[in-house]
Image (cartoon, rainbow, N blue to C red; front, side, top):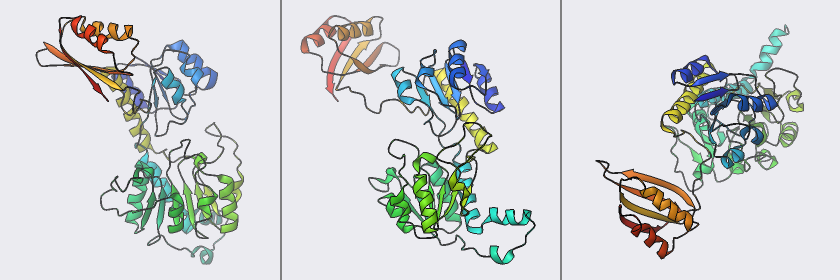
Length: 404
């Protein structure tokens, strides 16, 4: 199995892929046309990327059957195009959760104690203890979380250790508090993101980027934060209306810490200009939330596990683009002797009847003398077709049709 790694990747991961018996092509700076050509020229079966965009034309350029996003999100991959071509898309959820949570909490403490300003003053040769002795402290202040996946839960653990009450909004709580909090962490569940904003002193965003969350954190939320509140975003720049945020900073005296921005350079280093970072009450970091040695090693190990499992079993851990429910309306259950030609006979008759198979499995009994085939179909076969299937092969023992 050929694996094309098109982004910077840990050596432990490269070694792990090779140990799994993969032929590894490591070209860490591929993007755009160069990546499309490499996919074609190498004939790679698997593509591993981190932040590189993977477009529909790239997916159509070669023989890929799996794309692994070596990270949590997968919004840089054209998942719809991959699904149309039957290409699995997988990711590494939760492996960078601790790293992002650590940065989110570091930003919270930096806001409260104005650590960057302290450092700047000292480096400028100025001692100003009177000014920088002013701080509110975080104990007893309410932390609001928008999103409660792996990262949100890690932030909650740390906030609880600092004595902060926690109020959360997440889609996972839409039908009630079904998803348990980490052990020992009490949560208050809010019905809407706006309610979280009304009830918190610090608002931290941990939403995945989807069509529904794009621009979700907007004026309707900022206007409900109390003046002087803290706002932290270590998720995705696109989930926040940055124009509304800038307005709220100026008019409501919000203190803000951002690891992600509305428009970020594609390169790892280069010029950057965003008006929001010029505001004195805004701190910024360089989209480094997941960038710790621990996180990158964990992501590399998970990527190796995904590829190894796919190579050895044909199954893909963490796959994100399989249908949750197919168009199947009926299941044909066929008990049969485990002999050659039985399944071919079934499928040939289904094809003749213009019935589409949505899912199928064939379960073998101990001793490999008999099996049960379960075939999910997009419509009910006529009685005559069912009779042809059952009577046309002597190794069919029984046949049932079940509506699903």
